Image (cartoon, rainbow, N blue to C red; front, side, top):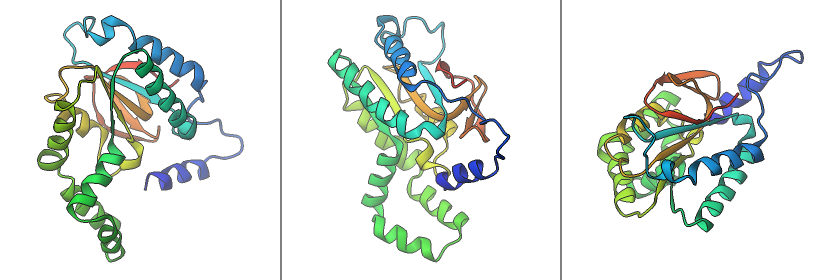
Length: 213
C-alpha cells in the first residue's frame, strides 16, 4: 500500500510541477545526524528542557534507497565509535510477529478473500498495539544495553501501524535512552505528514533532529 501511494504521488505530478519535497544531499544529511548523536549531551539527554527524549529525522521518501544505504553506514559508524544502537525496524518486527502468530503464507492466503479494509483490520488485530507490539518492543529494549533507540521501517508498515500511535505508546517504554524515528515525509513539530502527502496525526512531543526541507 505504501508503494501505491508513492506511485500515485509520482503519477499526479505534471511535467511542469516541482517535486513536493526537496531532495537533500543524503551524505551531508547523515554526517550532520552522526555529529548530533555522538555528542555526550545528546546521549545523556541533558539538554531536553523537560521534553521527552524523542527525536524525528524526516526525509524525502523518494530517496528511500539512498537513505537505507546511509542508515546502514550510520549504524556501523556509531558502533565503531562505541555507541550501541538498538534498531527497531517496524517492518521486520511486524513480519516476525505475523509469522509467529499466524504464518506469513496464511496471511497472504487470507488476503485473497478480503477487501483492503478487512485485511488491514485483520493485521491490526494480530499486531495489537497494547497486547502484542508494545510488549514485544519493551522486551527488546529491556534486553538491550543500547545508548540510543532507532525506529525505522515506518513507511513499510503503513497503514497497518501509524507513526503517532507508535510514538505515543513508546513514551512509557523508551525512557532510558534517546529515541530517533526515521520518518519518510515531513515533521512540522506539530504533525507528521507521511510521504509528504497525508497528515498521520497531530504529534508535538518529539524534537526535530533533522528536518526535510
